[in-house]
Length: 112
Image (cartoon, rainbow, N blue to C red):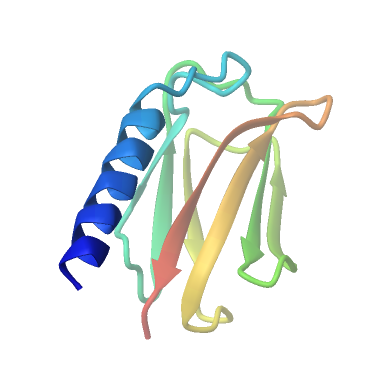
C-alpha cells in the first residue's frame, strides 16, 4: 500500500509539472470584453461591456445542453437579461464578431 501512495504522488507530480509547461494559445482572446453580475443570478443578470467592444458584436446565451436561449444583435454597453424563463443551472454566453468568430465567452449560474 505504501508503494501505491509513493507511485501516485510521483505520477501526480509529473502531471502537475507538465501542466505548468503548457504553451499559451495565441489565438485565444487576451482581454475580457464583458463583466457580468451577479453570479449566481436569480431573476436578472447584467452584462457590462468594456470600452474595447464593437457595437456590431452579437451576444448569445446557451443552456448547458447547447440550446440557444437568448440572442441579441447590436448590444448596448450595459445589457440586462431577464431570467424568469430560464431554469436553474449553468449557462454559457458567447460574444461573436460580424464574421461569426467567438471574441469572448464565459459561464454563469442561475439559482432559483
